[in-house]
Length: 165
Length: 264
Image 1 (tube, helix red, strand yellow):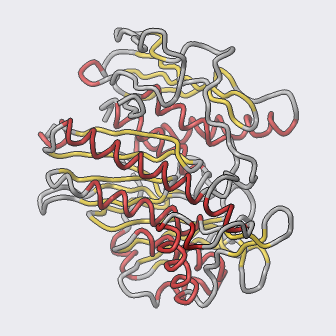
Image 2 (cartoon, each protein chain N blue to C red; image 1 turned 180 degrees about the vertical axis):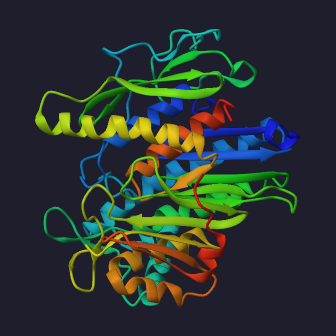
C-alpha cells in the first residue's frame, strides 16, 4: 500500500509537477525536496495532521484520507515540496465549508527571469482553475498534456479524494 | 447523497511525466479496489520503464539507438509498434512515431500512442471491478466506464485552451474514451510529419469515442492536419470531435453538438 496515494496532500504534489515542461528530453525529477519549505500535511483546522511517523514529504508515500465527514471545517493543507526542473515547488490549499477557497504557492521556482515568468503565469492560473473546476461540478477535465488540464484534473482529484463534493 | 457517491474513492500518482488519477464509485469493496488500483499503477510504471523516451535504459531508447531489435524487447513493444503502424496508415501518415528530436535527428517516439494504449488497458483492468464505475485520467486523456444502466454518467469538462478556468463545455459520458491534443500554452508542440513543420492552425482538438487509444490517435493526427483536420475527423465513424482553431472559432461534429453541455 505504500505507493497507493489517497489524500489531498499527495494529490497536490502532482499538480506542481506540471511546472516541469515535457518539451525537454531532460528527465523530470519527481523526487520530493526534503530541504526547505513547510511540512506537508494539514497545518490548521480541526483535522489532525498525522503524516506517517518519521515520514519525509514523499509524494508517493501513503497518507491518511483527509476530509470526509469533517469536510465542513476550515482546513489548510500543504502539498509536498516537489523538485521540478525549475526548482522546488510547494502549494498550499485552503478549504472552508467543504470547498477549496484558495490555492497559493509557498515555495516556487524563482531567481531568474524565466522562472519568475513561469511562476507568475502558473500560480494565478492554478488558483483560477481550482475554483472553476469546483464550481463546474465536473469529475475531470480533458486537456492537452502538460498544459492547464493537468492542473485542473489534479485538483479535481484532490476534491474527490477528500469528498469535498 | 446517494449510496454510490458515498463509496467513491480517488488515487493519483505521477507516472510517465504526468499525474494519472483513478476514480472509482460503486459497490466494490475496498480491498478489491486497492488491489486493482495497485496492479494498474504497477503496470503503468512498467509501461514507463519499457517505453519512456526520457529514460536511456528503456527498451524504446535502446531500439532507437539501434542496440537491440524488436524481438529482444519486451513483448508489448511489438504490440505497440504494430498499432503505431496501423495508426500511421489510418491517418494517411499524419500520425507518425519517427519525429525530429531536439538534436535535429529523427528519433523513435511512440509516446503519442503509448499513453492512450496504456490508459485503455488500465481501464480494462479496472472494469474487472464489476460493481464499480471507473474513470482514469492520464494527463487529460480519459478512459471511463459506468458499470450499470442506472449509473449517472461521468461529467468531463473540455478545457478551454486559452482561458484559465474556462471550459468549452461538459460531456456526460458513460463509456469509452476522450482525448485532447493541442498547441495550448507551450507553443506548437505537434509536428505535421507530412509537411515537416510545427502545427500552427489548430489550438485544440478533442475526440470522444469507444476507444481512448483511437480517440487519442485521431486527435493528434487531426491537429497535425491543421485546418483540414476537422473534415477528416468528421468522416471517422463512431468518433465525435470538437476543434478550436487559432482564430478562436470552433467546429463540432453533429454528435458532439448534441452531447456537449454548456459549462455551468
